[in-house]
Image 1 (cartoon, one colour):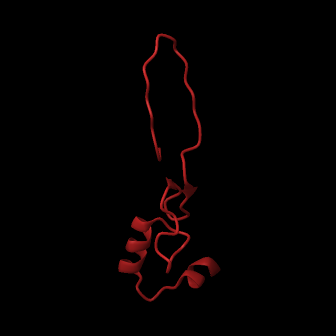
Image 2: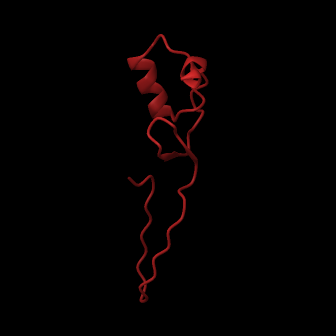
Image 3: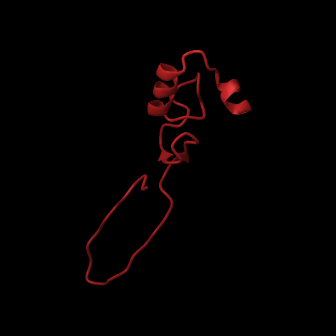
Length: 67
């Protein structure tokens, strides 16, 4: 799975691979630039924090970290 992809075209056949910008979200293991956007779940990206909040409204960040 790819978090970010950048392609450029040149005359030579070089391939460069590097880490994506941002931090890894432990929920989906992808790099995100908005980790910590939701103060209730600072370890997740905004999207993943919204999913966890919607699907598991009773959970807190400390309960997730203890698992």
